[in-house]
Length: 224
Length: 221
Image 1 (cartoon, rainbow over the protein chains, first blue to last red):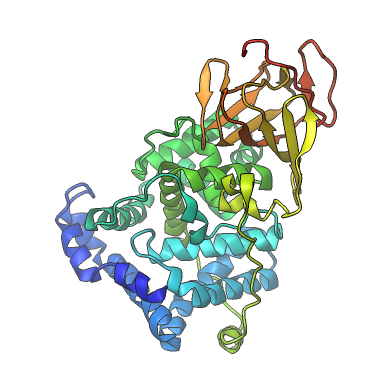
Image 2 (cartoon, chains in turn orange, purple):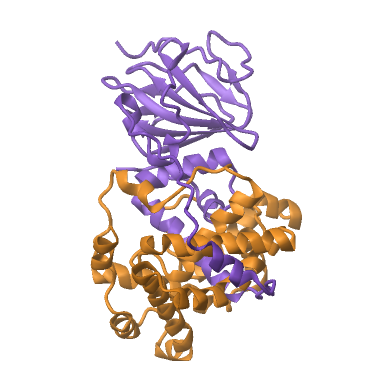
């Protein structure tokens, strides 16, 4: 299984970066250059996950832990956990990163997105144990639609999409950033946010939709 | 071809992890069948990742890393995989399989409609699988809350729209009477967050809603 994935696994990150830099749609080379460090960091995380998957590399794990564990604890705290529970959640998430590293697939998600989904699921476990259908990559083995073409362009788009979101996040208007943070950090649904901010539900929906639009998340085909 | 998708706010709540269990089942089952919405959820997850990157890190306890290291070689308690489904259960997308016991049997809920109630751990919803016999209609009813019906196999028509495998029908309020296509039974995942009120000839209050009584479809011969 691991071998097969390694074969599918993308291509040297540097090649993606080179192709990526040639694309105009991100907002120009200036933005990219300014953020070259962040992009290199994401490549690095991908390499570390590969090292864990292939060699059970503890040094690679330590490096990921140093970056992510304190952020995951913070993520747990923002979700309403006490410090002990938040730290426990962060540790559980990092152990899952170690165990599941072989299922990480650069074509489908950036390293940070992959780790985010693991932490989100651990938080769901912590807050509402078992109260969610478990989702794993293998869950999609029975899709009825053909999987997306596995070519460099798709990979590039996944990569580009993640970086673009990160670069654009800081330009969001405050009220849009606020609703996103409540949604992603505070375990609040659209309705919860509307109630808390005393806003009509439609306003919360449109702020999130506008924010996703600004982050250039494609919303084609999605009903409002 | 899947034509009816979950609304964006539902996908966002799902990606953020705040959606409660039964609607999560709907989204999980839909995105198991719909590559477009799966990609949509993944791209919304990248927003969570971007926010995570910028969160203020919290200090860990001094021995946090050592404690994690000590646990890396622990044997993982394996999660029991559901056994491969047989017969009709093969239509169940993977996320739903753990909800359906191998011993689960359809229970007659009324003329032409069978039901398997699904166990939930949280939330105000009720969830079940419904099997509507080919060419039959569900009892005419309206909703005190919201009803989500995801087609798993077969198809039905409701208020002028046609729903096939993977399609999600959202209904709130106005009365309707979904009609299964002739030729194949229609199996759906149905989730409601309030009692259903029968308004057809049988007309009576249902509580809980599962006491369905389907009436024979007049339209199909």
